[in-house]
Image 1 (cartoon, rainbow, N blue to C red):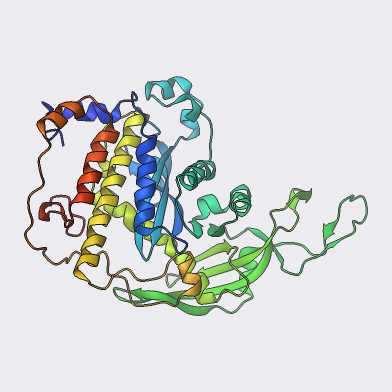
Image 2: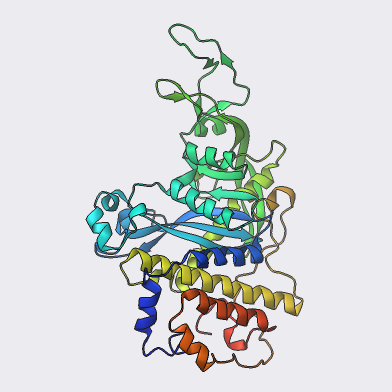
Length: 428
């Protein structure tokens, strides 16, 4: 890229990418629009999760000893809240925002050294960060029918209520001691010194409620090594997340699904979902498990596109690096899906996920991420940038640079062989 732009070294391009002198919000918006064009729609799901980047030292922005999901323990890393648009097992990351732990938000001078914007130097949970990014994406026109999240956000009653207020369907992870009431619980007049109506029965832990139910094996889709299945139990409940009524206990909230998953390893996981009452157990399982497609996106962002290779320390540089890898990832999906459509081959990613899983049966396994792609016919080389345009681009914003490549991609009916990925291998 530096050679194409006529720069003497890649350092100038690196400084430009990390410079706070220009606004990258239009690029994030364009990324959301392109992702919506690829996989957006009422059958798509928006997956809210987090991912960690290993980092040593103390000067890189946001680095601290915190929970690392891939390791399952505390480690020195940077943690980013991610939002991924997915449909038919095709994930496209559309948002990555750094989470600042207390060790950073309580030290403004340290944040200033890492060039953290002043509005970001406030304590914010990952759920609040996700909601802010969520609203930004909806403003950009991103279309989806289901929101999926892990227990990191799912345990927050405020997060679930915010999704309800936005009129969305959701399925989130919870902890085993989440308090729930029976679906037929009633509020009765208070007794004794109580002044407000109280529930006619005590809440119970989600784990205890599901322990009394039959657990049945459910296969949600076909994997590369056979059917993906586990034992599930489900029941309609009312979550104890209403107003406080005494001893820090909460009144019954909305009626939702309480779902338990009993994996072959013996581990049990618990979920809540506001899917309709008539939703089948198989559809519930398929919707809940659709969240794991974002993990494939993380793996490819890191292993193929160098998302975890950033060596800078600043807030702006880290987020610009995340933006560039997301743009590259989206563009590679554009090339690959275009190749499948051009050759008339059946799409390998035809499995329902998110909202689509509610109404569609499980189909054959997805093989989208296999590396075998038919060699395309010879095509002409990519045209070089005009000399006049090279001079202009040295002084223009990144929007011009990205605009050129977007226009180039739209004008070429068949992407050049040199740009076609094989298993998203950037060496091509």
